[in-house]
Length: 410
Image (cartoon, rainbow, N blue to C red):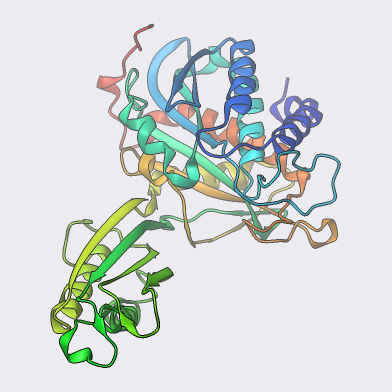
């Protein structure tokens, strides 16, 4: 049966799955119901199912012949937001909501896995369907550390994100940096407490912290080309002091930095190193000390040229009606970058904004919702993208056919 007709037959199923996940959202590493649903579905498709990172799920599909291994990912976690939508499938879990499209991602990849499982005789290679927990807090890295990229070794990766800032009918796909590297930081500026009447006998950490907040702005506006490597450093909290007439002994700040930096994270040109340089020198000027901790983060998401060309070709030549293909870059963070930093990959955006359907609210908004007409488009992109990868494997320069392996059954 022709692919688009198969997908049309599953249109109600993908909507039903998405609404079920939306109704029962779960926070990162608490996706117990979601992962059970995913496991049951994948096992019903005849895939070999395993668990990683507590609630993460991987379904391995073996093609009939050895070949490259493609990783396809969906994220499963929701956000700590109280939903304000008036819909039949509104979240029943107080203070928890799918406000970023992960419910749609999971539903689309599940249905794509079912369709591809019926075509495995056409595939020379393997697919790892990865359902990632805790994406909002870099859940991909724990899966990688637990062996996700091995047995069989992953050669390439594909992922997509529902995106309401793009209109329904648009697909955003861009070569190179497309989503920000991100770091969460905690900074403790240490001074010496004293009386506000005798500041000369103290070391004021509040003044040092204020100058740090001002000083790091030079990184974003004076040191980096905003068109080539845009960088945003934001302070989200500042805490210090117990009374208005007491100079405290320390001030604690926290925040995030986001950047489209492609170089070595340990080089002096990286945003992290620039940030610490300003902190260190400012504290030295104020006779203060500091303790800087980068809590968690991930590198810039960089799309590989050949994988982007593959996705563009699928969208332009195989989808009907043909979507509007646009270049799109975001300073939002996305931990798919951990996969794409290890193997060539492509990550693209599926427009789901429709003002008439009130699905044009931004991500992480309590009224976030999507145009469900795009779910079948996402399924088709997954299916055709996977088939195109295997059909064109011999033409992809980064692949090394001599190392294709048969995975070991556990």
